[in-house]
Length: 392
Image 1 (cartoon, helix red, strand yellow):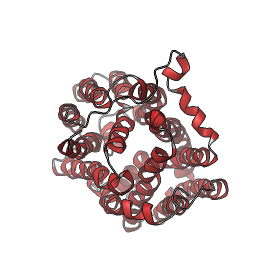
Image 2: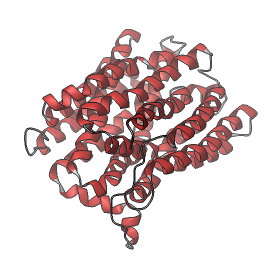
Image 3: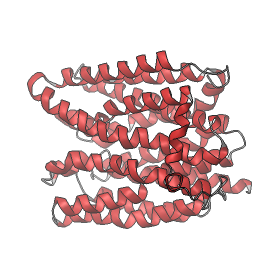
């Protein structure tokens, strides 16, 4: 595993994150503009449903059978074609069902990508606690750059944003084969449920892991409103370049990533994770002021809460489990946050949006989500204990 190979981790993070950065923040407005608003909730739910199905299976395969970098490369290649077709269907007016079909296939293929790349990264770094953030930050930069480019090209309401993303995914696929060779370290199993990645559920016997994953699930539910309804609210407040405005989260996230190594080696895990959830509480509380200025500040806080809870949490999970289970552990985190948490998030926030915004306004909606984050904070504060100064 040559030193030069590790630099490709930064390249892949940049390309992998910039691809959804082109279309995901703009998706709600793209669908509304093209008379496909009826597909909006389903479209946001599709990646979350896929996150419940394929990551655990693929996590088991990279732990037990296949080299992770090759798996990731083929994920990128195969997914890019269906991503292109999904937005081509919108552009050509084929109808919402074609869009949802192609988006679903892309999501099923692509859902394991982040957990696989995190496994490769954490396995290839000599001191992941200090250096993971310096590599992961390139994903944040990629997402932010994509958002700026979308608004610069005036693609905030255009399906061309998704088609550009498909070509970026192709480039990511090529770069994946330059990543460090990451061979499976777990033992092969003939037990069907272990090959499906369900053995990762046994990790929940660890009290701290259980409460971390439970809080991640609860924290992810109100998180569903960030991309589903923030652009819509910004638009109502008169913001045109919504994708560029949303990138303020990535600007703050970039700074937080660069300091993440220092933070997680200096402070207890429980302290770091509680600060992250508190930032999530403040984020939607500031939204409730119904002002562009306060919303932008809240968007910035999103960058801190995402970095310190989910990205620093990946390092915590990585060092807490045996090396033969690390791919599945990362996949389990993706399952509870982006998968189950994502599905519940879209369902819950879309229901609350329909019940609250029309009758009581945006402020009441965001305060309701603030309360949900407070519940996640309380459960984590009471349940998580920590085992020593280094890992607590």
